[in-house]
Length: 576
Image (cartoon, rainbow, N blue to C red):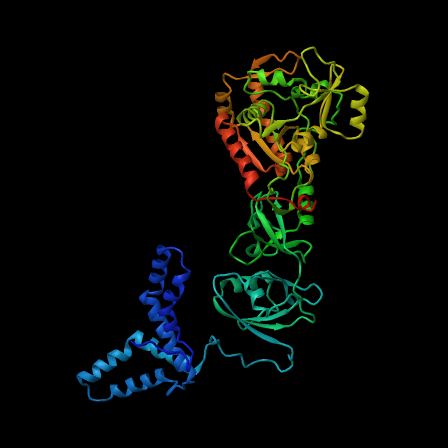
């Protein structure tokens, strides 16, 4: 087939250009491999055929062809009916058989559609019984598949009319642009709705497929599209709309799990927000309880704390963590796998619902995020810290605590402890310079904020284990803490894994170790449950210390991803 010219004069046809392109590009190609690739690509027979078809169609389109007949399908049908009355011959039978084939019927149908340029979908005829008095009525038809309509209705308390309560962002009704909040619904598929309950109407809509006809009285003022900026939240509780008696329409609800990231699409309703899962291909939004509404519900049904919170006294020796009183040398040489940190005091965290977040990725040269480890006594926090320090001492580091006790002969200031006076320590307490502090045998011990800053300023990852009630004070844009909760395995596995391990006694200052008792195991389990219940919404990673090597590997991998991947953090951290 000869090359076809798409134009005249000096214009070159697309097919001719395709044929000459490899030769024209050859001087600009560096390698023989690239040259072969270009020749193979532009020499592909199917590509040539497509270009030829394109040019042939373009040629006829330029001539503005008019169809000889725009009803070939009708003509074929009439011809078949006429042939049926004729004397049947072999030729007539063959022609009738051809005209009855679905492929031929389909071809003729497509021909007529193109000839008539009739590309709009065919909808059922409009109803003829429209009341002349209803001069503002709208007749709307939507073609609905299995997708929900994406709108909720309610009965207006003042007028008793059925009105559109909300339009779900991204749903079928929203995409149509024909239905608005406040519109009064008169009929659905010819069925009057004045005397029906909203639940009955919703059932009619749910059962309808294909074209649905609405008779609507438009609202006086149609809803203007909201121009709210994109807002993302991390959800801090589980939610199933099917179990929520307060939701106006269960089918419109959006289920989620704690930790999911949602994009808030609308906050127009003070009680029910519209949201969608981040990254979900489905553009339709669903209903979720608003932050204020959910906080009120949580506050009303919040159970009494399993343990009455005690007012923390920093002068109580029984609550002081032994890690304050163990020098760096003591902590390195201690052979216990599971070091004890005695603490059974927790404060009540704020009611967790949603936290506004933004994507964050650490830039090269920026300070590392603070890594905070929390967990019950004996779960193995210190051992995990120790293994991280040994694995890469140039990358990981810990803080140096402060104390008012006298320096011993083998100790150096700023190595085992920062040794300061009691007056200076109390001044720093007053100025809120300590993350944690306490008193033991007349001496103060504590971890200061400046000791954390010192580690981070050296471009190292600071590993810090603290009491869980201090986490919220560390959640600042400066530290951007990555909180890891280390929890024990079930009781049977706990007995098995800690059979030969020992726990450091908190009753004296000699660092004596003793085997775990059944009471220790029970306390570890109940303490972990208490911590997770009150502070679980602050954790970004949960590790079950079933096997120490596996737990360490999981922690190390999480910290590696922390430095290389994008994470969702509170939005206030990204505005600093």
